Length: 482
Image (tube, rainbow, N blue to C red; front, side, top):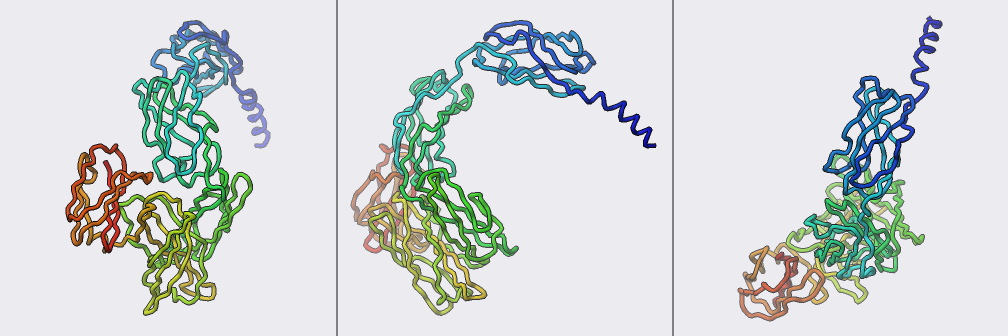
């Protein structure tokens, strides 16, 4: 039996010793719009084996014309094809590919050169430098682009990856090679150079690498967003957000994960190390709380969430963690260095403990979410706790928003609006009404003694606005959209 097997192997091996390949194409150069005959030569190929050989060129991608007009099989290793090069083909080197049932797909990379149209490119961007949190106009200049051809050109910046804010607010195409855009650089963007890219159906993706410089926070900082385990156990997660310093950042969690998101955590105290491009390092502690140990206030769905404040975990062994009822912000004090001093009220059983902490904020107007992380290493159960609460800030006014105050004070309609809005106060009269855009610029500032206020807003451009209504006892904020 072994002898038979050996003979069989000697018979079948030779047919697979030599792999099939494409060797060359002659001629290997053509001009756009030209029709010509080309001969493709292969090695160990089977063009004449009744295998329905097909031929493709890289430049026919997206072409609306017939590229390969006819194919003539000369021999198992040679075919001649009549081809037409589309008039819109860009100058460059393109692959040649054949396919049949016997040989499969065979590729000759960069086998055919086209003298064609100069491909689109981005030449410059002006202004090419901005600060984190800044809103500004930029002009993008291209060459051989088609910005004004009704092609719905979109614009992207490298620093918008993972950003929760709108980066490109508006785009205006002045002509086929010039775009003007209004952009907002997210406040947590790190110092560095970022790419700019455009896309439309005619040009595809056109990239200008390292063309826009962002001046971010000097100091590397960040926070961790922890998620509690569920009833399944040890399935908590953590997402780290870094800003300041110099991008890009690398991450190393205490469980060995190097991703920005780390999963499969058991309850407890953990840490993550953040390193920026210059080697600056920051280590943050965070807590994965046990199930049923997370407290949330209202989500303020009618307000604009612009940032998250978090610090390292605080050790406090006075609290009975297993009896915590709630943890909310009791009072606060905004400091001149874009930070806020917060006093938390933690209620457990029949007792109350006040915990203080200082948080950094971006200084942009909007609703900030704050995270309180508490732990006690000496307790065997109920030793980890995370609470969330939210605070509105717009430089002039800052307020803790609660469900009760929102229900009892004010309503604003219509929302979205076109020309006018009505502010209706249910229980008391307003003393100040301030409306700002999302950059903090005031567009309305007036006093009123009426319970119903009608405001003409027809001169405002489309976008999001923050309405602050201040009475003698309350400050309420709403987000409205035009």
